[in-house]
Length: 458
Image 1 (cartoon, helix red, strand yellow):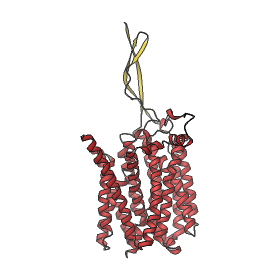
Image 2 (cartoon, helix red, strand yellow; image 1 turned 90 degrees about the horizontal axis):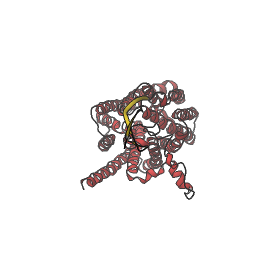
Image 3 (cartoon, one colour; image 1 turned 135 degrees about the horizontal axis):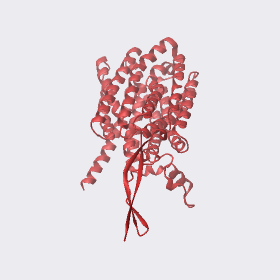
Image 4 (tube, helix red, strand yellow; image 1 turned 60 degrees about the vertical axis):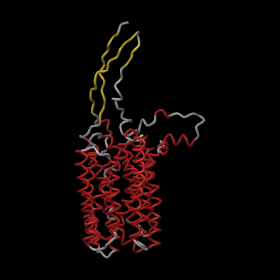
């Protein structure tokens, strides 16, 4: 039996790990700096307006709750759009919608109008931009993803440090509507950022892999294949264009709902680990965003001036920046799972947030808000990476469905926060409610990890 050995050259395409990828990282930073970062000063911007038409705490929690709900539930639409269109197109759609919402917010005179312009329209725009930009970032980086994400977020926090002072200056010199108009104009930069999201195909690296040997035996090839070494673009971190090719056609007996569930990969909700991870991330994100939006109100109602509240917010973001720099260094030195960072941050946030509301003297607030800001980096920085490291081959769907879960959680927490404030007339109890969200994460994730370790020991 004769054997003929045939040599063929094979190549694999790899993420750029740099080059235009750094432009993508800058674009992500710009997008968040002109949209999300100003929201950290929501209380300073809208507090006076909301107080003039009712309860500022209730208005803040309602408007932010609707925003977060629309922002996250739009993830389901983003998941479908990213299958049909490029992340650049989806990002541009979101940027224009967000601008329309921010522009109409200039003219609001009632809470319902603000809920529609800010909560609904801007929330929808952000819900399209967020997955589109993170999709692009995940395409361009693999090994350097944690490092680049950490550095990008560090620059975002640096902007957050000066934002309260700029907002305060603008409010004094231009008033409420002038400040909102400036923020609306600033949000147009997200359009330019979306334009820079070039297709990764233009920048992929081509690298030769070890020569594959083919044995021709009795007229048939027995191929010794390289183990999944050629990574298709659709399977690389973001299964968008080739997601579930095997499920393109369904049996006639399949129901309409099952078809929808398969096309959107809703079967992921059958995975208890995914449900636990996505719910925990949603609780942490919602509790973080809601807490930031009410910090100025909590401080002002505790007797501090608006200028002092702005100072505390800057200290908060400065500590956050230090934490993100530390995380960037740690990600380069050791390989700790991002989920453990998130879990550890949740544990200590339960302690520090509780301490934050125990006393109202200046130095106590200064120390505790610094600790809370530092620990925030352990929530926000690893959040998208928790999904990426667990579901790297299906990131787009996993992250989009997480956003849907986050929307449901926000939908629950918004009215719940308003009810707690109305019932107790206490901002402190609202903070305790948000702290309870982190405690839930700690308990549910710890139970899962302990159970997993117990099964392995058996």
